[in-house]
Image (tube, rainbow, N blue to C red; front, side, top):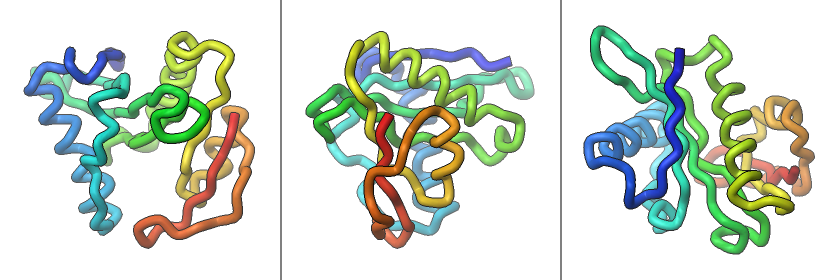
Amino acid sequence: MIDWQWLSFDDIPNSDLYQVLRQRQQVFVLEQTCLYPDIDGHDPAAHHLMGWRQVDGGRELVAYLRCLAPGAKYAEMSLGRVLTTQAARGGGVGRLLVAQGLAHAERLHPGHACRIGAQQRLERFYAGFGFRTVSAPYDEDGIAHVDMLR
């Protein structure tokens, strides 16, 4: 079972923020061998969805995304930094994460479209949530991406 937690940046306890940044580094920098500025200045204005699981008597972050308000990055609201940890992959956690993220984002910003910059290999995954591709593929930090809108 996953315990979902939505917090503004200022409300994230330091130990939880450490786990978030550690997992973002693990997935986006180390696993994807991609040197890029993960700490991009958007976190303080974002709402953060964290999925926690009890593992060996401790609490471990297994899923994460952030939601940005309309105008923060795109004209539309956006979800980004979507990740599931290696240990949590393959069991549907990613689908639960995106479903939770979209539901909360729509409560935060009702009536607004949602734009994402998705890795092209995940295009079908996001299409399953109603996103449609609105750009040609482009290179972002050595990985093919597409913009998608919902």
